[in-house]
Image (cartoon, rainbow, N blue to C red):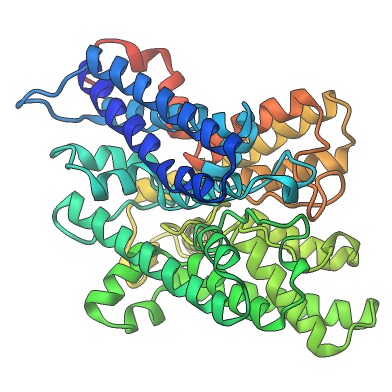
Length: 478
């Protein structure tokens, strides 16, 4: 592995992290938040110090190029560095930083309303930067890494496929970033028209499009009691659960690309069915009027399936059937290539199609059935990759649940927190609750929550590869 090149690019990344703190620093200065000013100045100084040390050790030469190992190292170590540097404004809350950048959005603060506004902006900004991907945004606004940049993108991207939509990697990153910024601006303007003040509109727009879910009130959306806002949020959370790569292609080729996308159509079908069943359950079991039941069901299915985690009402008090369907949507998550977490609908579609092909071959051994998506045949390696990831997520869920049970949390709460953490959701059921986040978790569970948020955001195998002893050996097999 070219450690000199990795160190140099990590130096650029820490410099980018320091630059990202300029907006909240300016806000703290304007709002005369002395503590916030010093906190962000200290954070930026540490970012510059890290950049200086990394650049002193590293350097980029003309013939340097990225390989698989360099891509994995930059992605994993880069995310860890940014999370460590990003925790300083929170007074050393590593959990809050990881939760922000990973898009989980679960807070360790029992009362977020007492936080300075500059800190609230930083929380939302960390959601937004981590949503599309630190590396993707970095590549979109800074010089390209070279011909091996695809390895970095693949290491950070989510979903079973890592297709690009343009020949040049940097052009691809720029297109994704442009769509991301455009949706965020449009979302902020919509929230403003729905009655939010500019500060609240910008914060919630960033955390909506990033499907992170950090809010500026303890009760998040419930504090507003605004039906128009909830409808708008439902729309944008669903949009953010779609593949941003799909939107890039749709922009170039037309809206029919979205209408023909198998994964997005399946995702819309899942949330429609789940919302209908939950609406009926709320109407029958809790005597909600039908319109209120539909509104709350649609909002929370969109919120939890997109892994945003906004809360309009305490769904932890809902009937078991409704909570069961919400848990299912948490586990499934959004679409591959979106800012949403979870297993990803594409993997579910591939696994069901694989099972169908297996059954067909059992009935007709000579048949030549093949798994297809969007009319295109899918390589066996991608299908096996989906199966491997499904297995890995289930194992990680079980391990984290057992850790929490060792830490004194009961089985039901352990499973709930584990599933919502691995899906990067934040809210859950029981001890985690609709709004309490990680504030009630014991210390050991908080430590492991950081680890599993990190694993889930980088989709497990990228991190595990870095921890493999063979990764650091001088071998040409990588």
